[in-house]
Image (cartoon, rainbow, N blue to C red):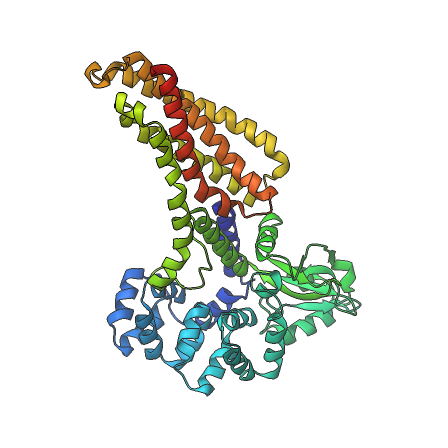
Length: 494
């Protein structure tokens, strides 16, 4: 997902919170803290206080700093430091902070407290945050034990949500929503909403369902507030078909929230029965996770990142995620060495070529990576698909040609006019300039095409474009650059 989309969602969420419309993770926490004078703090100051402060200083930080700033400071601490802080916090403070702790941090801390406090902590979590935590617990027996601590209603909701994959819309939804049935009046609807006002995460959008809970429309709270009490719900209801299947991917849900400017997206089952909603704060988390995953895949980093920040992830975990592609690409790079061996005689005879070989290879890697990044990003945003293959290739061919001509001419002129002739040995100054200039032009043009084609071909083969394309591009263009460079040298100099 794009940074622009993420910023748009952030702005919408901020507006919603300030308007008192969203009562999700941020809204709930802010309502708890309204009586305190929360204010922005420098994260580094908070970090130093958390690392070296006394329990009283920690309590002062709690009373003055916003939990969002404290959460950011937590990400910069080691596992032992975080555990020390969590153990030093008053238990009522910990409960209020629970929605700001990642599932990994909750899993780390919950082992250190007694069972009654475990129950209190788990009960304080919203249903979607609770399910995120339970999904983080790998031991099934331990997970069952935590579920057994829950109240019956919360246990049933958790077991229902755990049926869905972690990265599906159902796995990210919350059931704490406002819904009314058709066939009632505005007064009846308001009476029903008063009963769920403390539980619903979102009241700005109220969903209308039929007798078997199938989604048929939505109502704005302000329409209820200003309509006559005896007005039937169906007269002010907006028929709305926008929803997402519970088994759909979470990224598609976030895209729909951005695309259709939604405050929340209803989640339904195969029969269109309303199961829950995905709110703005959920969508922002999804966007952050998916963007991080795409960036890491483009860099050849595999595996699941989890909920831990960089400093909280162990060296062994980082090693496991990086070693795969690094090892594969190291062996693929031997192809470049093989090309150099094949053209060894040319290198010995015209040693000046070694001066510009890194430039030719690097130019191809840079432009190929640029092209791949543009195409992968456009595909992620839904702007491109395999059917646009021809148009993409034609566009990148023109872009690569312009870039290659510009850089090739500039470097060729530099070779011809700025370098002393004594460096060229048996080579002709003009011919060497032509070799370097033409090789750069061809390499940049070729690399641009390869960078654009690989992601599209990966999508056609039903593979992840980011995983397949980006890590392989550098190695491929290294080989093509050597072949182009030395082939031209053999033709023009030999």
